[in-house]
Image 1: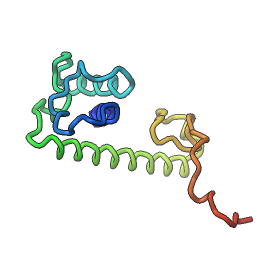
Image 2: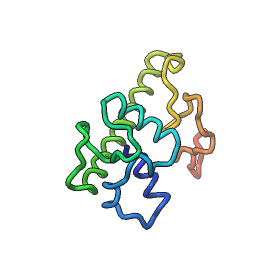
Image 3: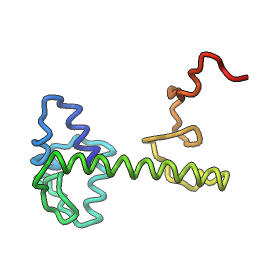
Image 4: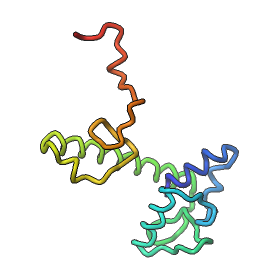
Length: 132
């Protein structure tokens, strides 16, 4: 949900965060984040109609404070993503080859992941005096 709403904010920089409380499923652009949101909503029993509000809690209730709800959702996502990234790294360290059993995650990919983006340059490699 948060990724979908953040995508809307990036696509429409003049959009007010408060307006995210009235965004419906029909307003979301097609893509992997919207598909994932629809799967999650279906799993927990939230409505999938095009006029259903995007920003709701697990019971389908819209928040009273939209900016706070968006910040909380973003904070939760970042925490979960960071924890999952850390745990996948520990799993690969403890059990070499275990990455073959893990679900591919294009967001936050690293060298051991299938979709590692070679354009990412670790800050530690930008030393003026490379270690030999």
